[in-house]
Every structure is written in structure tokens, then in C-alpha cells.
Length: 259
Image (tube, rainbow, N blue to C red; front, top):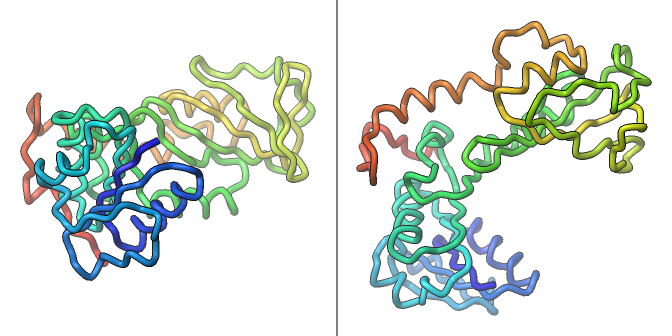
């Protein structure tokens, strides 16, 4: 697989090295001379150029690439690169780095982004997964928010302990993917039971999370809206400000990276 990585900072180089280790062909692009640390990823093809320019993307043969990763420290650059990759070169898969969580709502298909990766959000999910018991923890979002990978650790006093999976009434569009027990993953069947301390991994639609909490009789089941869902409403309102087609970047909408 040919992957173009725009942004040769520490993040971009790390991604490139992992992809090469996994047997993929990688092209690294950056416009800063100081980023050209060829010795750090010697097996990649390097180009000193602006990844937001069509001429640059033509030069490296982006039309033949299987995926593009926009990994710069500039959210505006990552959005523009993703949009060009989709609209001008029909790249099958685009992945974009989100530096400032306040900009996350813009990273969707209208900007050519298939998958957005927000480091603060991922770190939050890992912390919550480590400490949260009896709560719905968001691990990952798929397909522009249409599906969520969530984790629930059952409390020691859970009301559903010993219940067969087949007897639990999960909401529509919700799938129990795995039960993790004693550090071992278990492929769930209808005859398996859920036990206190189990980590349950679900694929579910965001609007079904309250129903999932109710099915497992979690303490948060009485809440009208899961706390983690609140930012999504704000994002939707912000998106309504944009017109159809290719939206223009508004300097007031984009928040600069904090660090």
C-alpha cells in the first residue's frame, strides 16, 4: 500500500516508520527544511515541499496513493490537504490529525476527512477506560460519528451479573464485540454470561447509548443525555453555519494549536 504522510514532525515520522515496518511504501512531505531528518526514516521517500499545493501532490503521484495522512501541527493545513486529496486526486482513504479539540467538528467528509484522530480525545478515553466503573466510556468514533466503539466495566455489585448475553435486551444498532475477563478476550455467544468486573466492548450508534446503559442497569442510565454526547450537539450547531459544497475556512472558526 502506498501512503503519503504530510507533516514530517515527530508524529509524522513515527507514523511513517510504523507503516514501513508493516510493509507499506511511504512518502513523507514537509515544507520546513529542519523537518528533513532523512536518517530517522531512511526507507521513506522524502520531499521538501508544501503539502497544501496541488503541484506538490502531483509531483509525488498522489493519484496512485491508497491513503493520505495529514499529520502536521496546523489544523488548517490538515484540512486543506485532506480536501485536495479527495476532490482533486480521489484518494480512497484520508486520515487527519486534530491538534485543537475545538476544531474537531470541522474534520468530516465536507473537508475530505474519512478518519480524524484527536490525541486529547484518545488520551481522555484511555484514562476513563482505566478508572471508570459502571459507565459508558468512548474509545473510538467510526464513519463520521455514525458508530462508536465504547467500553463498559461492570461494577462488583452490578445487577446483571450472571445474566446470559442472549437475555440482555440491547438497543437496535448495538453489537457486543467482546468480553474481556481476567485479561483474556472472549468472543461472546448468546449462552455466555456477563460477570462483575467484565470489560464489555460494544459497537453502537451514539443515540443508542442511553438504551445501552439501561440494558445493563448502569447508574448513569437515568441521565437524559450521556455527558460525553454534549460536545456533539455543539458540533452540529456549528456545522449548520456552513453552506453546502466546499466550505471556506473561517479564521474565527479555526482555533490555533494551544501548544
